[in-house]
Length: 138
Image 1 (cartoon, rainbow, N blue to C red):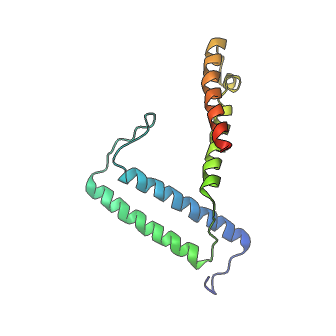
Image 2 (spheres, rainbow, N blue to C red; image 1 turned 180 degrees about the vertical axis):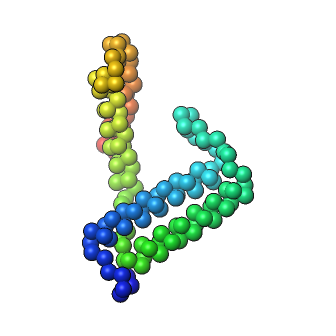
Image 3 (cartoon, rainbow, N blue to C red; image 1 turned 90 degrees about the horizontal axis):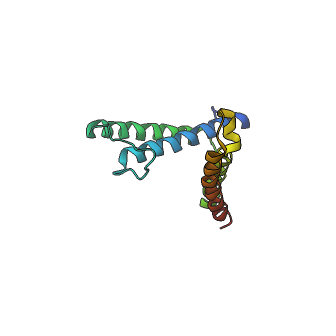
């Protein structure tokens, strides 16, 4: 940390969180730009950048990543160390929340849902929840 730039713990916490979010989002953008095929059948990403634009954008992304890292290091911000288990289980917990909020009972808040459709939706939701629960126990 530079001697001129002293931050209190609250400032460090906010800047650290900001830097980490920037890093994660830039990595995701890079992944989208560099991936050759789309594995998702529900969110199909059509390639629209020409090679020059993609190359220019990747250069700018690297520049932002470098500046973000400089900010992180200059102010002595703290890295987070998480195991892959922590990262993966947090994703499963998020999915669990999204799925439980999609049960037919909760969907009633968005309008009337006939019972047969609700039972069918709940069957899909419950099936996925059972599998996520199994993964959470691994």
